Length: 160
View 1 (cartoon, rainbow, N blue to C red):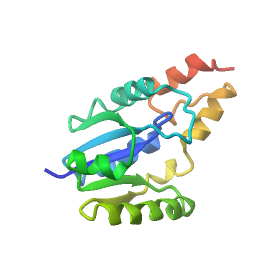
View 2 (cartoon, rainbow, N blue to C red):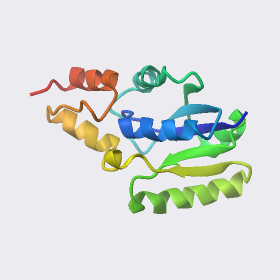
View 3 (spheres, rainbow, N blue to C red):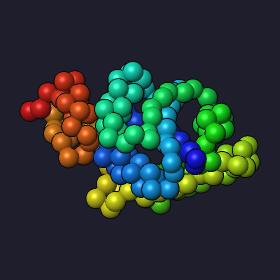
């Protein structure tokens, strides 16, 4: 059984994240979406809200689970028995940062491989920050995020 983790802040999860997850499911038997507690970020949604939104968005995938964690991603991966850490790359600018972390993770845990996946081109411009900004300004995010996430954002920021 080949396990992988897909870590991120997911504030909120987007259709681009789900696209990367679906691609990863063709390569791994079990994937855990891991909601990171990042001290450098102040999320819009609480950890519980993000977990709940992700669980709803991935419920159609029986081999996907969701959990939160604090600490080094590579330590979580080892403890879970993962052979890979899934990372989405939208642009070359993502690669430089992700590459450095992947090399450090390889040094710490050589048995855990970072697997870079690109989302479908229609999602390459999407990120959670853009989604939050659209919502803050009363714009619809429908089509960019799962339906349950769009509703949660509209509750915080009603559409104009």
